[in-house]
Image (cartoon, rainbow, N blue to C red; front, side, top):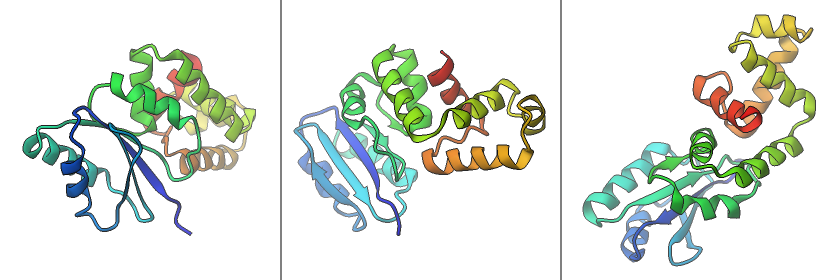
Length: 186
């Protein structure tokens, strides 16, 4: 079964009708209006970042309207209402969790960061979180991390892969490691 991926759009302007009509051109998308300025878009298929970026560019050029988007990972069931409240304060662009966390730190959204941290603690055990922090502390070097944490390298890779698969925060990349580090060690 394919998990549902959802995107939440905060519209900077008041006119949503034109944007909704344009988005309906993407047959695989389901669109609902959450409020005057929020749309929820979901798809049972892979929702491409490029498709949302194209929609944003079209909206800017043709509709003279900008929007900010948060694209959740398929299994995300964290504090989405809190994220929606923050979207109007962020720079207009398309965010996933990896790009959202540094933006929250820059905008001093500490309460939401605390909720996200608690959410990830509830999804993963303490060992997994500490393993990822150890991996980041060792400059993303799996061999050094395995030795430092007295852990078999396969166990380390399993924990990293499991976390990345469930969260789509790729802690093996600079951006993902930075986001995770900022959330847990700021």
